Image 1 (tube, rainbow, N blue to C red):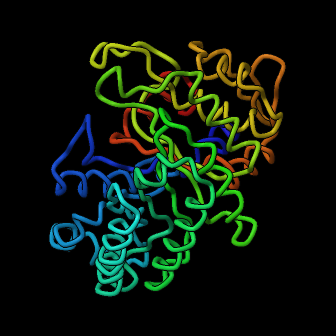
Image 2: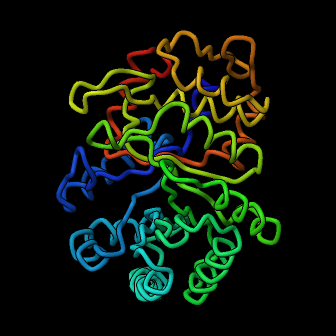
Length: 321
């Protein structure tokens, strides 16, 4: 239980308004409020709020925010920002969205916190394969965030089906000056087979961030614990236990892409052994303290439209009561 909780504590960024759940915002707000009161609320990290829905959120969550303010238990948000194909248009949108999100916080003092932001990288940055362009994009983006007093980590989403090594190198370079602020976001799932990245590609991404010590998060398709076939999508999907185990073992032992791929493809939950002092897979083991270190510096969280499905998975596997 200790190893499981250390591995998965505050790991789930609740994204109930996104597919496949795609709940109306009012239902997602109610569900998040219920999750905060759940026995396993330790699993929950934050509510993913698109900046395009800030106004609607303020209206629909009025009673919940009043309660969180009165009880001094603020809701934790991840601000999901809009982007554009071009760098200049992305900065324009970002300035506007930062003002929107800051306005939401200032109008509900003590009721909300934002401890991370997410922003898709513009195609202009992804397509040029130019490390210097990526670095200058990060610098300007953080300057805009700072204007509205968002001195927090930002997760920049990359397209894993394109070259992304220049982005990883630029993030590493930025973090030499401001450690841990420039993070990456990898999409692991989708609604069609074409949207699902291969184990080889995800292993390459894991290897890149572990080599350069760049924090990251994952999103989409991680409701089930281990690798499995999803009939609704029509292909194999990753499991959340696989990816978190691969992250902590890979980061600690500097696994090769081949070894990472094997772990990401692991279909047996029993192959990942949780013990009093840590966890292991095959001949590799990590201690509780090593898990904590990787969760702090490496894999921070994963986005999911469901809180209850992953929890039910852990219960069925008898990993939590």
